[in-house]
Length: 492
Ligand SMILES: Cc1cc2nc3c(=O)[nH]c(=O)nc-3n(C[C@H](O)[C@H](O)[C@H](O)COP(=O)(O)OP(=O)(O)OC[C@H]3O[C@@H](n4cnc5c(N)ncnc54)[C@H](O)[C@@H]3O)c2cc1C
Image (cartoon, rainbow, N blue to C red; front, side, top):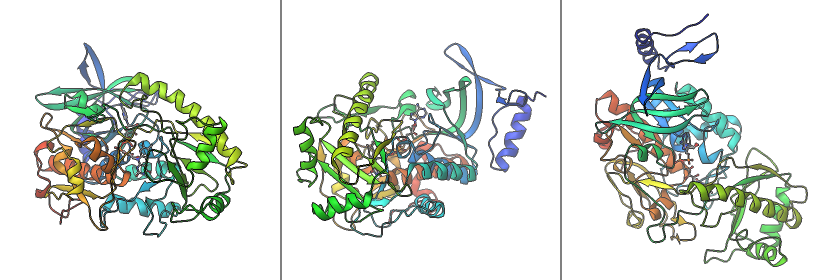
């Protein structure tokens, strides 16, 4: 039996769905088990079938996008999250980027972060190393996050469009009316009242005409990308004995299962493991580039595995150039091969190790950033800036690989991120969250850590929902006018 919903019935259904906090796709054909559109949007001379008409549409399911989707959904708004992969988590899952670093800012945990910790505990992940010197805020693993984020979105009644790539934004009178997306069924349109750009690359904002920038203003270079990978079959206790006990490396204050080791030749600090990597250059097993930066984190919940935060790709491979990005994939894969072989051959504890998994997206630390109503700069870090419209606080140091690594702020100090760095002058119904907010290259190198991106995304979801409830355009919302009980963060 075929079941195509008429436009009138759809409106009735979405009202009902809204009351029950559910978003239904426009039409469902039970015969073919596919969603078929009952309406269309004109784009490039074609009628593009309309797939969803939501109140809030979020692009990008990374840490900021998931937080935005969960908070918007929980506030009763019909919400759809568009993600090009088939897992949520963005760099955390597809980029193998774990663990979540600490913000170093006391009291920075917003409700989403607290809930994530609860969910990890429920899942059986020993996320807390209980060491105040530890740089890690949450130890976790990609598979746990994929599962937990999916569940959190389901509980918040957020629809997820997986395997769906954003193509373009349609704008009218300074507002986005619809997104064109590439789905498994072809091009489709998604309409919404408010859009949140959590793409990391500000692709929705740029398509809608928002000014942006990329790279360091002094060199034009993006931060270097890394092609992360996992290794399995490791005797982590043996690694700990060798690196921490025998070599006397005091880099990691914790011990297995919460353990890491590293070296970074571009830093002034001389790391104990620098010699280990330089020996590889001297023997011809590694290149200078392979040995530039090496870091490895134990993967909590996956015994015997380690997540390599390397290789770091040379700067000629750019996060904002499609051709050099693609060439970087091949170069990075060759680097992974050399580094993993070198470890298997020479690092005690890696005797039975193997390459377990390559990341399915390159690790872009920075690509494009919007120019919004407030532009965060390095001084905001050093001056510990406070804002009455602050949505999050952080104190992670400036870590612009190769360009600048700042001193840490004094214990207990932090700066805040204002809502105005999430909104733009050009587009009234757009909020931007995550690593592509309005911030300079140097400042972004501090605010980009996952916990901060989550808190920013959470605020974006709250603002989007509250704005719709009160008929206030996203870029006219005064965050401090939202009741404190509704906000995820209130500046002191
Ligand atoms: C190598 C590396 C190491 C890092 N190390 C750490 C660390 O140890 N700890 C820490 O806390 N932080 C670390 N970070 C920083 C942190 O991981 C990121 O800054 C953070 O994940 C950014 O979150 P986000 O939500 O803004 O974007 P992302 O995580 O980049 O997510 C963006 C999402 O948008 C989706 N998307 C993009 N374009 C489209 C499109 N056109 N259509 C559909 N979907 C799209 C992507 O698939 C992705 O899921 C590291 C980053 C890198 C690159």
